[in-house]
Image (cartoon, rainbow, N blue to C red):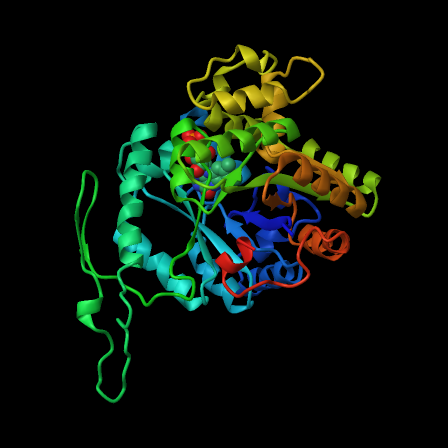
Length: 434
Ligand SMILES: Cc1cc2nc3c(=O)[nH]c(=O)nc-3n(C[C@H](O)[C@H](O)[C@H](O)COP(=O)(O)O)c2cc1C
């Protein structure tokens, strides 16, 4: 029977999706995130809840779209600091036996050989529990930080195709019997059975043999999150599961159907979609609503506007906060602008201010708010009606809300047979594909 798969989303940063959550009275994330023990506790909690994986989104430089600089993200801690998530994969898999870790790495700024080496070392060390969210780096600031220009949107995906070709060749380089590791003869590897890569392409050159021993799953699980036409084409070619953010149930269903269509047209099986969802839990619906209101009430407009600037590709400091969002021309994410424009759902015009606060609160992730029972009901409804593989969950405050989810929502979902009671296998691929 197919089950709902659960992944939990993080940045290695003081917040995930809620601006100023680090300053909430119930949040322990900022104080904890500098310690190994904190992350290991989170990993054990997620494993107790039989999550497939913890997923680390990553944007390696502070955003500089708003007011032309990084000042607002710095002032309010909006995904700044932005620490490297890779060491956390070692720390968190060391404390667990089954939990997978999804890592984000961009194909711009990292040579494919070094990307393969970093990912494969962690996959080897963790016994095959690493996933790779392949991104193409859409933020201007991360390219500026390493002295590169931003490559045009579709061309970034062409680069990514070539990047993947190199990684596959390195992962697939071992023939049968390539690794005798024989102490008597002293032969570690048979060089004739390891294919040497000699790649000279449009974007990359790589002359190498693999840097690492293969992991039990051979290569990391490939995740992807593109939603443009070219992004979907890339995703159906490479990804084993897709991350998507859609504003409501109907949009989720449409997205999943469109994706299935792209896969079918490419002669592929449909790829499972994990939809982003933010949960705000309380022991009662009223308590959850009060938590939400407390978080909402302290989001500075500036912080929300700075978050809105990136997907609109517009410096929102130049806009009147009370103008209708639909009047703002955007060359960036029309999908996101449209989704935000429709968020009121009752025909009421959404202003730039409304959209900024919503961006500050959940960055476009739909929210499920309430008691454990209500959240379980909502997850079931979303899962059944969207036809998705499951959810990429985000908690506004941490770590307490994660523990509440695992202790109070997961048992309800397990009782209904919707999520696993035990892990099916040992590798991330075993679990995410079962
Ligand atoms: C759930 C989710 C997580 C994402 N995580 C990251 C990330 O960590 N880093 C990043 O640079 N982009 C991230 N993205 C952005 C995508 O990789 C992609 O650039 C974006 O969706 C636009 O793709 P498109 O132009 O093909 O639609 C994420 C997108 C989604 C939906």
